[in-house]
Length: 88
Image (cartoon, rainbow, N blue to C red; front, top):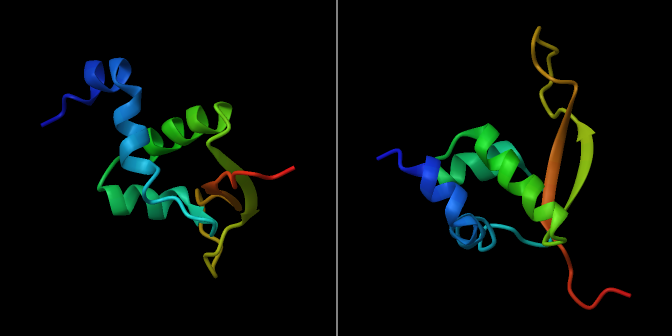
């Protein structure tokens, strides 16, 4: 079940195939994308960062949407959306 180690390294396109259909023009948090993929949050963040380097997605940092401030909860979170093609 967890062959994401070697297969994930060698087949980067498989993550592209999994993530790109979920990315839209609307901003989405990495948590939401990880939940929709039933995948580890940190793995999804790493793949999104890789996609960002290849100009497939863009990122913005926003305040955490959680109402209460809990110890250990980040004050900000990253949101991602696909890069709009044809932008000048």
